[in-house]
Length: 178
Image 1: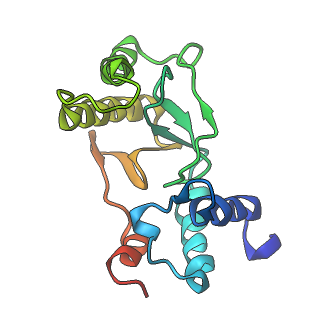
Image 2 (image 1 turned 180 degrees about the horizontal axis):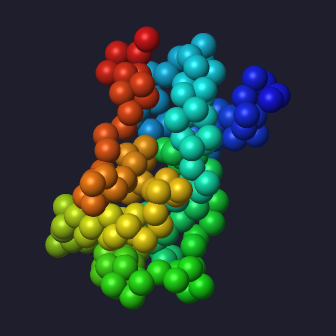
């Protein structure tokens, strides 16, 4: 365990990509890391390893990008980086799930390139995306972490699919830091 972590390469990626200021694009930290102090980064990464990386076999997100399937591999929960778009063929994804993803994704693809369509209903689109993500989760099962919004895990409990809030341990940085 280099750096004291089971996943030192992912730790470096998290710090260098998700937490860093980038000259070309500025600060891309998600809202829940905006107040995270550098001295608290190892403890936070330890939480991510223990509660997610050691628990799940894969990490995925339902996200939009031009002409993608809408399903992406991500390196860890809440990651700003997509590692690969998942082609739905060959995964055995049920047709109803593919249809839900397509019904959510196609209207986003059809928007103007500047994304400023005045008539576009963002709330309805977000609801369709979350509904599709819930069905994707049913298909993927318990060994795959899935999120539709960063660090808001989608889980199946007692047959019900729901989206969790950002974990309290992470969210506290957005509220008031340590």
